[in-house]
Structures are given as C-alpha cells and as structure tokens.
Image 1: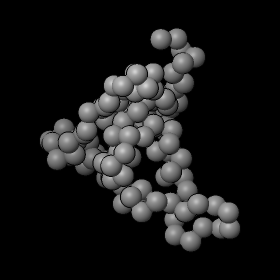
Image 2: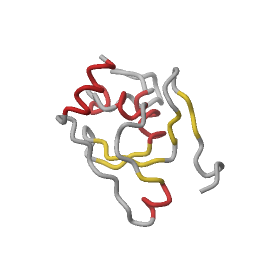
Image 3: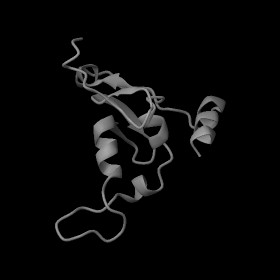
Image 4: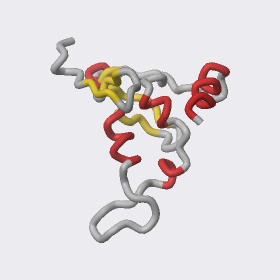
Length: 105
C-alpha cells in the first residue's frame, strides 16, 4: 500500500496512527474510522451553538479514545473493510487493555 493511501498523524508525542483504519467502537456499537472517532470527540458537550451538532452521549462517556489515539485497538484498513473484512472487538476487561487505560488515567 502506498503512503498516500494511508495518511499518518502524530498526536501529542504518541506514535503514528493510520487515519483511515477502521475499528469497532464499543460505546456506539458501530464500526468507525479513527478520523470519525476524533471528529465526534471534538464536538461541543451539552447544548451546542445553533447549527452545530452536540457530542454524542456515547462519546461523552467513552474510555476507548486513549486506546484509539495510541493505535492499540484492533483495526483493519479502509480498503479491507470495504472488501468485507471486519476488525475484532477489543476486550477492555483484558489485563493488556486495563494496564494501558491505567497508564493514561
């Protein structure tokens, strides 16, 4: 896959994350791209200004976003997702994810 097909970004000193990767969002029970997850989190909380959508309740209570930003959730590329491949669901109760979430908190 060429580098133009997978744009990369660096979030505040964290390793590079592929922005067109898809993952399973447990709070929303939906498949999302990393970009969509980040955009949903940037919406205003509560009552939003006229014309602006407010943040989703699932995003307000989400604990997955540190894992998404660090690229620690199971992902598939957008091309593979469109081809029928689905990412696995992360088990947030596993010791691996509990340790990662404790490091961020």
